[in-house]
Length: 284
Image (tube, rainbow, N blue to C red; front, side, top):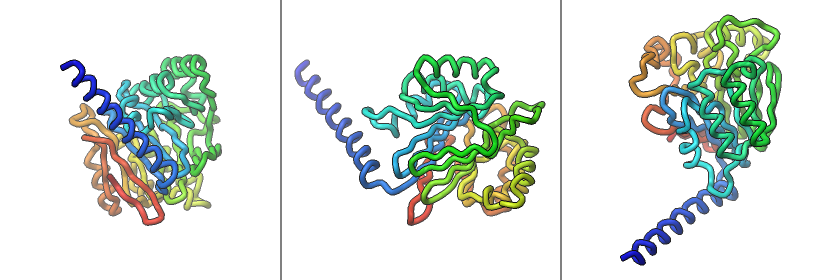
């Protein structure tokens, strides 16, 4: 009996290994898609970006360690690495999971701002980065990060300004892949959205993207009508927990997105995956 159980376990491990190997080979040699994956981490944010050339970046890590297991569905066992991790701002529901990610995965860069590093969670993240030989990069408006098949433009924050609202120090990034683009705004408010519209008024195409992640989990404090018009996305991602105490997403945001004919997608029940390819955009 014990021998049969052992045989079944070995067979299961072999099948699992073949599955991971097939997934890795497909991505390495055949996959010609770029992916934006809003991981299901409850009431929080954790977005995995993958380029068709193999670059992988995590933007925020959610409120707990569940992001580690969610990442396991997309990263092969023999390549548990990330090119970078962003901590958009110091709220627990965005960054606590990133600390565990640095413990469990090989992370090359930690991207943070000066506004985060002096906060308690920021200090914990910096300590973990030092323990695990993660390079820390302080980003600011105007910075550009070029990775294989992925260009990340930092549109906010401006470290020269003073902020009364910590959410407004959120890192806002535009990510350009070979086949598509996405805007991630953290918890930045409508006030910051309007500042971005003014800053890029001479280059409005910088704000024009295929996919927008609705700010602050679909709160009425973000994703204002002017910003939706400026970004003109095909899809808006809302990352919020089921029956969360904040009532996210707020109906005002849903109405604005509907007004501009933006398709709304979410990760309430499972990971949300958007793939860009030469054939267009597909949502899973």
